[in-house]
Length: 457
Ligand SMILES: *Cc1c(COP(=O)(O)O)cnc(C)c1O
Image (tube, rainbow, N blue to C red):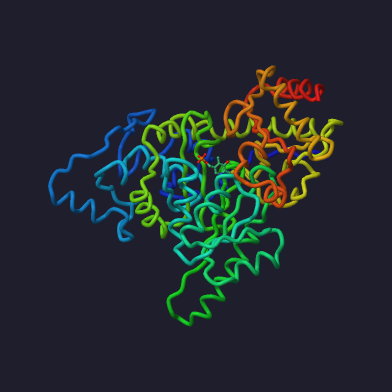
C-alpha cells in the first residue's frame, strides 16, 4: 500500500538561536538568516542597505561631556546590556558598529548570548582564557591542539604563573584527576582536533566539569568560590556542523580567518558565550588591544556569513568523496574523517556534528597518512605535496583552511611546527600526516589531481 505524502507543516527550526534573535528570525533556517544579517536593530538602522556599510572612524563625536562620561561608565559595565541598549560609541578599540553587527550575527549562529570579536583567532583564544585565568590558576587542555595554542600554553603561561596540564580528554580517570587539582579554572579543547580530526564528547565533558563544579560549590559552603569554565575551539566545524554551546559548553572560540571568513582575505577571531563574561572580554580586548578591525568585520558580514552554509555544504560533499577515495587508495595507510564509518569516533560524530536542520555534518577537512614507516610516509607525503604544488590547479599547498580553494599542508612541519616531535607523537600527529581543507572546486578535479600526485610517490 502506498500512502500519499502530506505536505509537512513548516516546523520551527531545531536550531536554537542566540544573541538578539527576533521571533521573525526564529522561523527561518540559520543559512537564511545569515544571508540577511543583523542590520536592523535598536543600535543602528541600516534597513535601506542590502549590504551593511563599513564604518571607518577611530574616534566618535560626542554631543556633550556628560554623554562622553556616560559612554565610559557604560563600557564593559555588567549593568549595561549591549544587546538591549544602544551603546555610546567613543573609540574603535572599545566598540564600534560594523564589528557590533558581526557580533550579533555570530551570537545568533552559535546560539550564544553574546559574541566578542578579536583581531585574530589567537587573540580570541588568549582573550577567552585571559579573562578566566589569573596567576596561580591552572588550565586543563586536551593534548592535541593547534600549534599556536600549544605555543601559548608552553611559552607564555609559565611566565605568567599559570599552570597547564595537557592530558588525554578521552581518558576519563586522567581528565578527572587533572580537573580536581586545586586552582583549575578552565578546561580547553578542540573538536574536531587540529589536525587529526579526533573528536571529543562535548556533552560528557560539560557534565563532568559540572560535577566538579558542584562539589566545589558544596565544599565552599556558601563562601565565594570560582568555577571551571569549558572552552571549545569550534573553528574546524563552524556553527554549520556543530554548536558546542548546545551541548553544554560555556564558551566557543573561533578563528574567523577560516571558514567563517571563507575567502582567506582577512584575519579575525571571536569568543561566543554567556553575557556574564562579556564585560571582562570587552575590558580585556580594550586593554590588551586586539579588537577586530571594522573592515575585516565587514568582509565576514558581507561575504563570509551569507555564503557560509552554501560553502560548507559544498566543501563537505567534496570532503566525503575525497575521504572515500583516499580510504580505497592502496598507497594510503589511514584516513581520518568523521564521516567515514572507519573513524574511531564515528558514532560520536553522528550524535554531535549536526547541521542546523539536524542532518549529519562531518565537516570539511580530511587528514590522512601514506603507507610506510613514519620516515617513509613523511618523505612520500612531501613528494606528493611538492608534486601538487608544482602541477595542480585544484589543490594549493598552503596552511590555513576553510577557504573556497582546496588547501593541503603538512602539519608536522607547518601548522604544528611549534610542537616538539615527542609532543606531536603524544598528540597523535603523524610525522607523515597530511591535512586537506576542501574548497569549492569540482570534486572530480580535486580527486584527479590527488590520484596523479599519489601515482608519483
Ligand atoms: C587557525 C586556527 C587558530 C588561530 O586562528 P588565527 O586567526 O590564525 O589566529 C586557532 N584554532 C584553530 C583550530 C585554527 O585552525
